[in-house]
Image 1 (cartoon, rainbow, N blue to C red):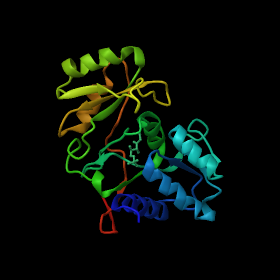
Image 2: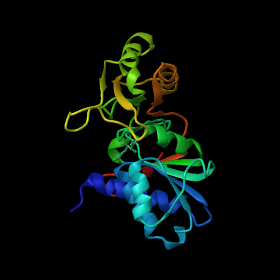
Image 3: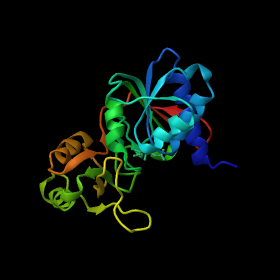
Image 4: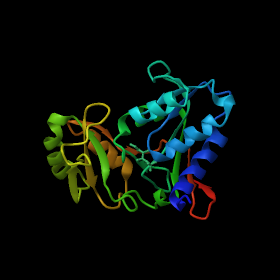
Length: 235
Ligand code: 5RP
């Protein structure tokens, strides 16, 4: 039997696809992660959504689109996207989000920003009063490899909110750092509860060597959460 978490992911994804993707849409952005797999599953159950072009946000979502037999597009071909659906690691009550648990935050942000509507799908564990409370793995910061040490030092010395710790994300086998789809590294910066994610985002983006920050502020139109009791809630 599926766990409450998996059921929550599926419920949120199915509901968001039902509500937000229609045959009138021309271009839809597809986020990354395990929840998005259910969104593509639901799209494939609806043949009327087959004529839409789908824009991926990672190698993973590119494969989901291709293997599902859907039409693949890119954001430079289609800079205007109707809707982008994506997962998140944590979402606060103002719909700010931490993303990048899968190290895809740069392409995810480009595709989310290109969309008229950005829709988040997640299980109940991702709902939070303040970013940094529920997601304890830190804010993912994509950095240019040769600058990673410099960024780590700048995080400690140049921010109004100092991180409690920052770590270079390592591959599961610890043989080397995680390398993003853009050839970069990821630093996970632990701030604890983040009072003002927009200010923190602006400050981190100014640091030399930072490619993108996994703070998505004021971007989402709605978030769907699959709850443990089998219902779906929205914010
Ligand atoms: C990848 C992401 C994912 O959307 C986020 O990590 C959520 O993943 P999941 O749906 O597996 O919980 O931002 O960079």
